[in-house]
Image 1: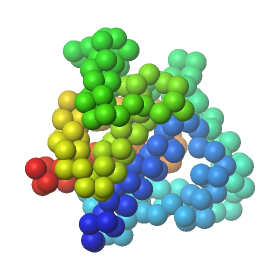
Image 2: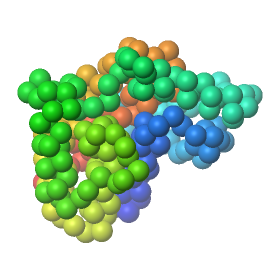
Image 3: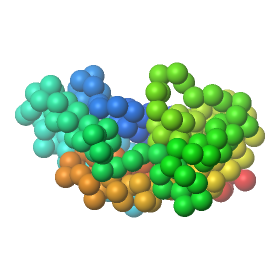
Length: 208
């Protein structure tokens, strides 16, 4: 895979996760998913990514005869139950999992400082606090795009962000997501998220 194709693949992974976790998947996303327009990697990448995309392909195969609106409705109900509530069983915020910071307390400012150091501010369309999983994914996307444009310092920013933030809670969060859902789709999302961060961790280590 050439360098630009690798960047495109990295961005596509993050874009998939943003769409899957930002809110309940809309009909447009579900239609693309069931029609095969959401690309999955050829060959092996790493264990969680391979497992996640295998589950995603199985989910698509199992729902070929369903109406898009029916699948979207089921995913919306599960997303709401899992991550919105009332009293959701999974809390998709870094500070919920950090032992050294109170939930939505001073740890949020530490995440925001990581964004600010790289000259990035969270998009207004994300109403959640800035330690929400999708805000962190949007920042990761920004750093990957900056690397694609030749900004070498973005590699260092990603290394610090992974070590101090994203990697500190991915295992606990994805474990909770897998344990709390019976949806093959959200089990796949948990594995794809874990595998994406593992891939980025290994890739950035090789660039420094």
